[in-house]
Image (cartoon, rainbow, N blue to C red):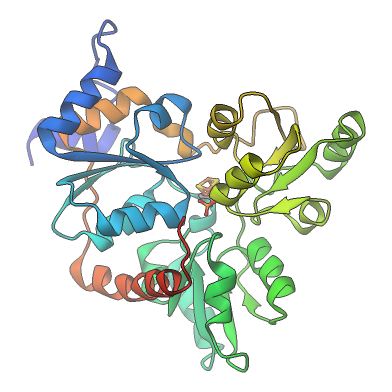
Length: 333
Ligand code: 13P
Ligand code: SF4
């Protein structure tokens, strides 16, 4: 490993300056062609990144796109578990992430050793894990799901089969209610989706009586109970396009508002207020990626996702199962 590679892996692109005159949008387009690269971005990325992406989607759509792309370089503008999933599906391609520190509080809430012990306490249970987890947790799982296909994945399992659901307790509780199952839940949560204030949302609804509340199922039950629509980011976006209401309160990460506003220029989207005064419904992990880092990571093809092959193979099995079930059910993210 040369000194520059080592420095980028340790500190990111801190020491590298880009010419402020550079048109990063044009440069990124050039690099895409030169390197046969595809830029995949989650809806929670900053607007500039969404604007330059070849594909923007929810976790399901991104996994499906990663599974079928013929690009040689996958540039993943999202968080680590998403880029890792792309690598699991593409062992022969280079997968880069603009900032290797872009983690996920939900994935962090399930350390593999503790989860292994938890699983051992329920030996007859099948493990369904939300895609927001590490490769180690995926390797300990039977099927992966996303917020866009979780119900269908659970329904594909015989009713008398006990299930462990990890790592999101809020999504798990919501799914227990929807499917009538009593899945054993791992006690994890997303820091962004647990921050919404029911009190402030209730006051906002009084001021905007016609506004509908759109919520992601990672939100707490109290928020979901008052939501008009609950779904993955793609489902929320589609709902806002097809529904004829003019105003929405959006209880998920604020990045989604960019596509909502672009697709519905005449509608009003209000971010649901957090229970404090900071902008905590911005995911600090997602927002570590910037347009400049995206450009640099394409230029240097770093930092790259590297995976141990036995772990990759073990983590791939439950992802493949998810992709098969989703395809059979006609689910597209
Ligand atoms: P979806 O992409 O499935 O909507 O989930 C949102 C999320 O929290 C990703 O980190
Ligand atoms: Fe993880 Fe929550 Fe950020 Fe999504 S929004 S990446 S679940 S911390």
